[in-house]
Image (cartoon, rainbow, N blue to C red):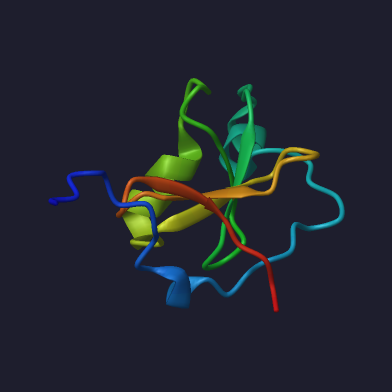
Length: 97
């Protein structure tokens, strides 16, 4: 039997260096600088950059990933613990060991 299901794992887990969210997140770094608004926040798990989601007007988290080749972001929203890999197009949950 052939498995045609989409990839369900991230092949970039070794690039995660930042697990924990900062205690106080003011907002999307770029949106704050330009006086713009955002919908939801995402944190780069390679460097900790806080950017806005793709539902936000400026999509800074995705722009950061494209500019830096950092593949994984996690939700920076209260009560959410999921991550997203731009390269593998997959959502998942990662816990620090």
